[in-house]
Length: 617
Image (cartoon, rainbow, N blue to C red):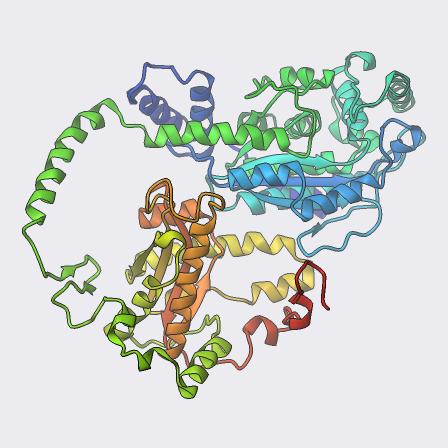
């Protein structure tokens, strides 16, 4: 009977299909119709058409990106092939998990999620964000014995497939391949020599920056290993068993899983490109799903790119690894994709003038309309000056004596704070319109830096829209479960997101960073203060809802581009939160995540310092 790991890999292989010709034709047609000379975006047009064929859509998307970093150690490090000891692998993994590596910074700029997988690191790493998938604590030293058993190779491939499928689920995704493993340039160079037959000296580079003596030793070590094992180039399983390594094989599996789910794959440097080469040995069509992010100075990288027929996006002399080059290229591809989506066609440009004239005429006539109530498409009436519901500053309605809180009023404020809960269970009962307006207006009276008021509130009642929102949230919830060990994963998956469907309405609170112009008082030094301001508005709504005995849940597990597309939010406006509102039949005394045993509240004394960080005196 075949291995269950092999069966999982085979299922992915059977699902890797050709690119979508019709989508590529539509993409090419749109690019030619944009207000630019044909072909003037150069090679970017080729990649945009390729990505359209991968994703099966006329306009490719690069805004839903994930970075998968596979980490593992190598026995061959014992031979002195690296400038660093093996324990640096675990140290760098912790650096990724803390968000302090180069790839983390670049990923934040690209709004990409970083997933770190321990597939073969020596020792134990304890961190809640680490994906634990260890096959073994490092490979064996291929200078003396085979690096892996057959079952270990299939297991590593299957792990990669599982991760690749999980992050690619839902379609229109981009997966950047990254790695961490001291000694992995030696292993990837050995693999490349085994598959290509090229002389070792023509492939091996300096990796982490070794000197001439270490480089000569590295070449000698790889040559001895190839001579010892005589790997069979036409049998990838034979090559992988003899040479390893776990994170490289795992990345090959990620490529297979991502391709099976029609995701664009961004290969980073030498190691991840060799991983793609391995994947292509199992299914040649996988190379159609790959865009080479850059070309590194490693001699073998240029060879690997030629073998796969890939042209790199960038050639900047980068040799950091960890998917840093892939995410750097991602940023440029995101710009190209955005241009393809947002540029006008020649036909649209001619229509735009007519639209402008129409809007101008409407604006002029609107000056003569006063004191009216606006009727929205969703049936909700927003009050104008003639409305009985006041939108003026509440403080202006109080006497000087009333500006001070009584003991009862003060107690009510603290009661709302301490009994505020994130509720996910609702009963089928509509909300009074006046209560909803009070809650919305409480948000609108939130504090904002420079009084920029960057928020908008989209009230969603339409069932089809709520179903679409629920679907993208559920998809991300399942993908996020990869980050938890088995027991914790089961607990996480029990936390449902059905509130979006059960609640009578959902409010999407957005952030418009352009509100108030380019220079907002108090915001120039800290651009994120617009988001801080929106968070204050949401907290106001939460407390107001609690005071109205109305339940509110803040849903934040989603990809922002999905929400923008469903709700037709402009590209520059960010959805900050989906707030589900309704009545509930249970008000827990403690937060749900606390009562479920997920996490305890941190003691107040642990978060309180005096004068300077760390001073508890």
